[in-house]
Image 1 (tube, rainbow, N blue to C red):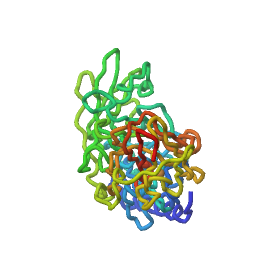
Image 2 (image 1 turned 135 degrees about the vertical axis):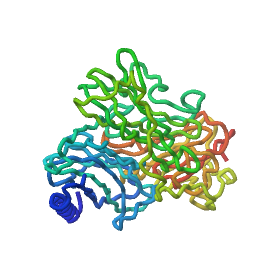
Image 3 (image 1 turned 60 degrees about the horizontal axis):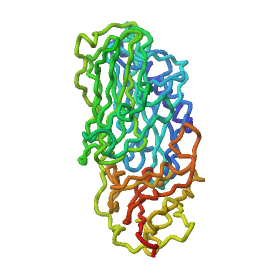
Image 4 (image 1 turned 120 degrees about the vertical axis):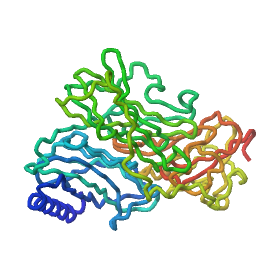
Length: 481
Ligand SMILES: [Cu+2]
């Protein structure tokens, strides 16, 4: 971790806060502790997972009752989400996930009287994935606010311990993702994962409860395009829904961006569970508008072992949730405005030489890049039945790029809701490039070829990692000219 000065300052501030709390505020409920993790140097175009030791935590034993994350610049300003965003942050304690945050920035709070047990000797690790959507380097901090009740304070007496059950729809992984293809699922325009993926015998979204106890809270994590996550309980052949965490979009264009808040369980939500019960989660995405690559569906649940709560088969526990924040300023740049770029359908093409490839270098598609002018801007043309090869020359710098179809002209301004993977013909290269196994979205290859079956026409595409990158190519019925 960089910035030891910061670390020390924050720890000292934390100790002072706790001391003040003990001296002056015996009736107070919890102390707010603020931490800044960083500075984190963000490379041009970065989209990688990092694991760092994290000593920014309370100096004394106690209870954490609430957790609120953010991403900031040195001056405290929150980066625009279309510039740099926190793809995820996961706070691991002694190797277990305790808190997690995504770009939806849900505040996590235990219900009154419950808390996560904290010991000063706990080993914390920060797993963070910061996505820089631009070719410019940056420097950011991960800020987080804990509500903390030190041992010995009146509020700590009788505190009930919760632990986080980190449930998700995919097998446990540092990068647990799945793809949602446009038009996948039923005619309802939605795709429920894993049910509609039709994977026989799939059980990665199911968890057997190990001890009797009570569930006291939950919230879902989705990516843009996500509609809701569901939590179910199965017992003796019966199944009941416990909670639906809905994505409430502020985004004017609908379910297509990070301008969203997830609903969390109401404060009085309780579900009694028994050893042997099965908890199952599912994630539902909109599949009408666009494809959603590397989507997530995670539903952490706060569990109190040994407690009791309503039997969900006797009482309807599935109450509507509530959001923990409104529209955030950093989500204000939606994109989709006229940007002065040419419509590639009106440009002359340039034939590709046999064996030629479109090289991607310095965030530019070598041929047919919409941000270029002159001959280099001309979309390369290939013959029907052949394919166009792309090669990512930035891969050696650790930069990933994609070639993902978007609806023509795909030349409007970049924002959180534009462009989308909504080309009438669906193609996607995956993340061209390399990275450490299991800790990256990288496809572990730098080249990709377009599908051979494309009909004659102009095809527009963008880079999902750096959506300002746009390009086009043409397929011609006869010999390219
Ligand atoms: Cu890119």
